[in-house]
Each structure stands twice: as structure tokens, then as C-alpha cells.
Image (cartoon, rainbow, N blue to C red; front, side, top):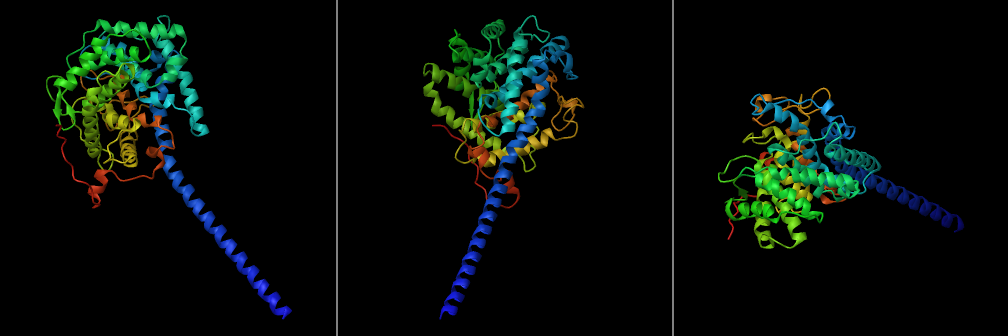
Length: 424
């Protein structure tokens, strides 16, 4: 009996050991799959950071070193309307547009040690870059008076609104120089188009940071678009005439969203517009998502097509604001925008041998440039990186990749029908 009992105990021990090994193996397998899944998800963010760095580094690092005018080549459209003036303002174009795209990321805290190190480097560059841009004694002092300077001062203002960290870490005398530079733009009467939002954005910056501002310049832009220039199905006309282009995304809707947000924080003004604008902006986000083809290409329509991924400024902004419509998951938007970045930024000859953007949409295509396009103009593509301002734990980054509408439609997967927006 004792021998039999011992035999049973040995079998029981072996069974328990085998069970433990199976459990341990299953746990390791599950952990490995989870890590692989997490790795594939976080890989998108790593790629975005690499692409953002490739676009922004030449501009920020050289301006921080007071060498942007020395180092940045200025290519001009063959149809350029005012060569001497365009050449001078190209540097502010590049700087303002980069800052409008990376502002939320600069303002973010945390992330992997590599991302934190990269952000710290960019913060140092940004502080020095702003200081040089507004310092009359610096070699890289920017041109602030005139038509195009109004445009790109507003992009810098947009970036500063999105990055309180940067504004708060500027030296007081640099802050004063920024204010003086922005006030210089008031000499320019804006064209009666989306340009009225440029003046409104600069005043919104003043309002954001408790400075004296001109409420009428804000009012003019908001009222014209919200009362007179909405044409239906999620889109505004660009002034008195509607054009089938990407200006609802390049400027109009992201600018309106920011100006309305600042006004809401300041005094609650325009709160009656909020429900209407929410519907409009969500509908246009749906349209934008459906414009992205299976390979990341998109319709080549309208002026300023050399802004590349800047065509999706609005969709990126909505994702960053966490205001996407319920019909769009953050993961499918991330996947779609990733495809756009890969298509446009990995194209042959998208960059010069020294790392500056070339004029074009898919590589070097100089004939695609409108009469106002310079090397600096191209950096509006940085606005597609706005979702980097969301932490890696946000569903935009943490959820597995998902097919966007074009992928579903052209692989035979079921997809929701599209319907126009009809406001009451």
C-alpha cells in the first residue's frame, strides 16, 4: 500500500509540474503576443516622430543657431509674383508653419525616454528660435510687416496658443519682442478671404495670454464665416466664392476652432455658434477621411497642393482635440494619416540632399507650385503631426491599426454609406 501511495504522489507531482509548465508557457506566449501587439501600435508613433523630426529639424535647429537664412535654400515658384519680397519672408513661413504643427507635442509631457529626450531638444531649439526670430540684432530676425508676414505670423501665433509651455518659458524681453512683432502685422489690411482669420488668430493669441487685443478683428473673421460663408455639407466658401480645394483644412476650420476655443475661455463669446460649428467640423472630418485613398494618396485638386499632408490639417486637428465624429475611430484616422505621411514624405526627391523639402506633392514637382509658393511655404505639411500632442496612452495611438473607409470599400469589406449634412 505504501509503494502504491508513493507512486500516486509521484504521478500527481508530475501532473502538477506539467500543468505549471503549460501555464507558464501560455503566460509567456500571451505576454509575447501582447508585447508584439503593443510594439506594432507604438511603432506608428515612432514613425511619426521620425517623420516630424525629418521635417522640422532643419528649420528649428538652424534658427536656434541663428543660421536659418544662411542654411535654408529658398526655391521659388516659376510663377512667383514678387521675388524679392517672397525670398525675405520664406524663413518666417517655414518657422511659423512648423511651430503650428509641433506646438501640441512640445507642450506634452512624458513618453518614452527617447521621445522625452527629443522633445527636450526641440524645446531648447524653440526657445532660441523664437528669440532669434524677433530680435532685431539677430541674423535671423524675421520680416513682420507686409502681406505674407501676416499669414505666417498667424501660424506662429497658432503654435504659441497650442504650446503654453513655450510662451511661459520665453524670457520677458523676448515675450515683449514677440508682441511687438505681432503688432507690426496690424498694418496689413487682410484680403477678404480666409485672410481675415489670420488677423483674428493674432488677436486670439493676445487674448489667450491676457494681453490687450482687438475684439473687432476677432469678431470680423468669426461672423463672416459663421453668418455668411457657410455653403453646406460641412464646408465654408473662401470669401465670397466657393472653391473646391483644401482651404477648409489648410486654414479655415482649424483657425475657427482655435479662435472659438480661446473666445470661450476668455468670455464665453460665440457660444451660440458652438453647436453649429461642431456639426460642420465633424462632417468635414468625415469628408477628409474619405478623401484618403488606400495607398495614402488623395485627390490632386485646388491651389496650394504642394502643402502635401497639410491638406489634412483639419482631420489631424480634430483628432488632436479628441473631437472626431462617432463615425470615425481614432485608430482608423491614425492609419489613414500614417498612409498620407508615408506617401508624401517617403516619395523620391521629397527632400533635397541636405534635408530641406522640395516643391511638389509626390517628390520634386516644381510646376505644381502656385505663384506664392516658396520653400518656406511647404512646411505647412507639419500640421499633420498635431496628434503627437496626444499621449501614447490615448486611443489614437494605443488602439490597433484599423482600415479607413477607402480600404474597407476597395477590399470588399462592408462600409457605411455617406450622407450629406443638412443643418436645421
